[in-house]
Length: 402
Image (tube, one colour):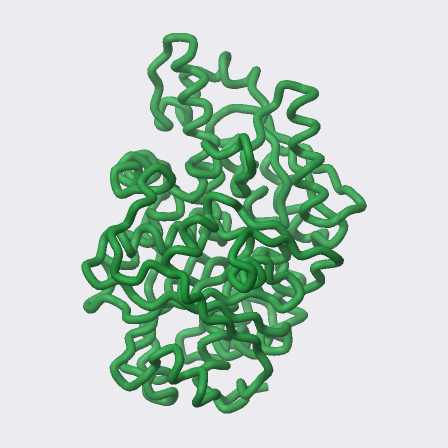
C-alpha cells in the first residue's frame, strides 16, 4: 500500500515545556561536552570499517508538506549493527576497558584493544546490561571487538530476532519474565554479585559515568549530520526512550550552534516517560506493559542525566500511537531511492507528519515554509522478521525495488 502525507491525520498528545532555558548558554558540560566529543570522535573514527552514514534529502516530501527542506540521517548502515547504538554501547565498553587497564599502569587505546594487544588482561573482565535490543547488540559487539566477556538481559517482549542478533556476537543472553525496567534492575543485581560492570544507557543515582560515555558516543552521529548539511536545521524531531539519544543530540546542537533549532521529542503513547516527566516537571516513571511496536522506545523510567538536559532545552513533547509507524516505514520503503527504517527509527518523522496535518500544532511548533527539519533514522531492520511483517517485504526486496 502507498500512503499519502494526508494519511497522517492521526491522534496525538502534545505538551509545551515552558520551563526551558531558551537562548541560554549551554551549562551541562559535566554530562556531555564538545571537549569530550573530541575524545569520542578520535576513538570511534579509528575503528575498523568506520565511515559516516548517509544523510538523505527529501525534497519531494518537503514540497508536499510545505517546508523548506527535510533531511534524514540513515543509521541503517552503521557498522554491521544497523543502528546508531553501535556508537554508544561499544564506545562505553572500550572506554571502560581503557580505564581498567590504566588502573594497572597500562596506557591503551581502542586500537590496541581491537588488535588484541591486551587480550590476556581484558579477557578477565565481564560487562553486562539490560536491553530492548539495539543497545545490547552494541555492547555485545563492543565486547567482541575489544576482547572482554558479555552478559545481556532481555525482557519478555524482546523478539527472538533481536535475541539472536545479540547472541551472534558471543554474548550470553538471558531472558526474564518482567519488562525492560525489571531487566535493568536484574542486570545491576547480577553485576554487584559477580563483579561485572554494567554498561547501561540509563543513568540512576550512583551510576552516571558509563551512561555519559554511551551518550557521548552518539554525538559522533550528530557531528556527521552537521557536516553533511548545507544549512543548519530550524527543527529537529527526536525519538524518546530513556532519553540518552535525544539528550546527546540536544546537547551537541545547543553547545555547537549560535542559534539552536526547535526540538520536538516524540514517544509511544504507551511508553511516554519523558512526556510525563515534562508534564510533572520531574522524572516520572510509567508503569505497566509498555506495549508498543516501537520496541526500542518501550522504556518506563527516565535517565536522570538525560532528563536534566532535555528539561532545559526541549520545548515540545509529543506522544503518538503505533498506528502511524508502519505507514512511515512503508513510505520510506516506497521512495524512488528506498530506505530501510525500523519501527523505532521513524517515530520522529511520524510525529512531524502528524503535526503537519494539524494546523494548530503546526503553528505551535513554528513549522512553516522556511523550516528546515532534521530527523535521525536511528535503526534499520534490526528485527528482520518484524520489518517484513510491518512493511510487507523484506529489506533486501525493498532495496532491490521488488
